[in-house]
Amino acid sequence: MRRFLLAGLIVVLAGLAGCGDDPRAAEPFRADVKMATVGTAKIAWYERGSGPPLLMAIGTGSTMAEWDPALLARLARGRRLILFDYPGIGRSSRLRDGRTSFASLADSAAAFLRAIGVARADVLGWSMGGFVAQQLAIRHPEAVRRLVLAGTNPGGDEAVLGPEEDQETDSDPDPSEDAVLRVLYPRTAAGRAEGRAFLRRLDESSETGEIPDDFDVPAATVRAQVAAEDPWLRSNANAQALTRLAAPALVTAGRVDPVTPPVNARRIAARIPGAELRIYPGAHGFLFSARAAFAEDVLRFLDG
Image (tube, rainbow, N blue to C red; front, side):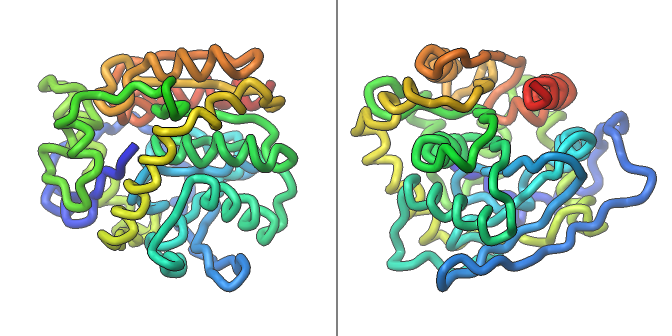
């Protein structure tokens, strides 16, 4: 559930070939970053697209700029995407007391939605963002209409972690380029090409303003988010609470995810009443590499 730290990596790949078949709007989109006041803190955010709101909760140590813009372009066809930086990340306020938990991040997300005038939203959580999304639906059910979980686990005894080497990469505040691509994409020539194309899209989109130039990830915040996983994995409370969720859920995973094996998605889907389950080709970044199928399924599910 760790970040895929891209600051400093994307520029070196600017000259590599990308994927030319991704949808783009007739008028180029430019991200307009705003600040929301949540208590004494500031939460940085921007929105894209129109329609019912979809809150996007990203993984450990990642900023709102690190979603694949090609995926966002597809999802924005039918939704008002709300992208934000967690406390201590990017342009948001510093992390208070140097500690965090997924419950507190969920509470901050609920307060953030209220601050921007969104009473109820669909929520998509990827990786650690899936922890936040689960807690948001459990702790603030009135704020969540439908729930999409991607590449995440239920916590406690139900959680299944990938190999130790991949977990270490996922926890590293400053992973190498090769290590990043090895967990996000399949370890094949095609997978490596997909990963390089993804990084190129980020580089190009940050230069044009399609995504914010927002890649500041303090190592202390990464360590705090990683530390929050220890109590998550020791407690069965989250997994048990999933059986009481009322929000419809779509649970998704990558078939060869080395960080969060797909058995986690099966266990989550088995606990949430009526949940749908989808397994896609790909690794931890399957929602980027299989973006056409993933976005189609998500929009179909959200439309109910």
